[in-house]
Amino acid sequence: MSSGGARKGKKVIEEEHENHERWLVSYADMMTVLVALFIVLYAISQVDEAKFDQLRTSLAAGFGAPQVSILSDGSGPMAETSTDVVIPTIEDIIPTISDSIQESEVSAVTGSADAIDAGDLAVARLEYSSFEDLAAQIEAALTAKGLQGVLEFKIDERGLVIGMVTNEVFFAAESAVLTQTSQIVIDTMSPFVVGLPNEISIEGHANTEPTTVYSSNWELSSDRATQVLRRMVEVGGVPGNRVASVGYGEARPLVPNDTPEGLASNRRVDLVVLSDKPERIRALLPLVPTLQEG
Image (cartoon, rainbow, N blue to C red; front, side, top):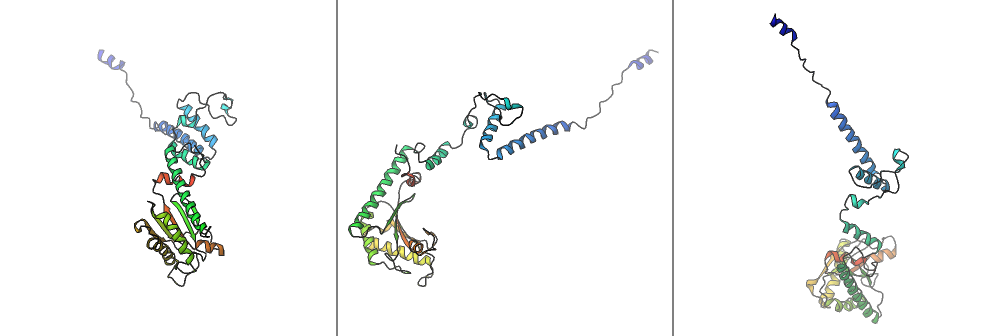
């Protein structure tokens, strides 16, 4: 009797059934995160910079940034957000990458020298001034011989570019033979570049008119550049180890070749006095005239 009563009073523990739908909870959490991610990506892809800034400050507020306003644009539940809340700048939330580079780009557009290294700018101004003086000296010497205006001067990131537009002054059509005028011009320039430490690049160009004398305009432009180089070295005394010639054919026109004036302008030889300053200095040379004096 006692053993039978014991069996009667024993509780049977039923085994729990395995819940095969627990993955739905994790799946729902993942889908919620993905939806939030797509919303953020969509907002970021919009061009509206003001709304993008608002979104970033709103996200920053969600991650604990103090005193940040939530998106106040629209008529949703947050439309009553106070406008007196202090909104931190984007730079306070997400640091700006390469601030100095961005400021330099702005300076190049606006003409402000504030974001450019003062030492670099001073060196660039001195280099620019030296090229201006060289151009003025050459022009004055040519003017004294009644040849004013036959050269074109430009200062770019490479240095001083002295343009010898042929137009029958330096070379006849399809010819690399130096005219008498071109010899006088080259002989007048040479003394001013003999003593310079700079490398000299003599660059021949041609227009799109086909040549019957040379195989192509490449050979014609190269020959013209070489003839200028030989005159400067053999007669003008320019050291041969500092000068080189190159022909660009018709590949680098100054102006379109669709007019007689354009054809004449592109039949030219450029003498480039190359700057020997570092690249960061040379990059400032074209900006010097537009930069404010400090």
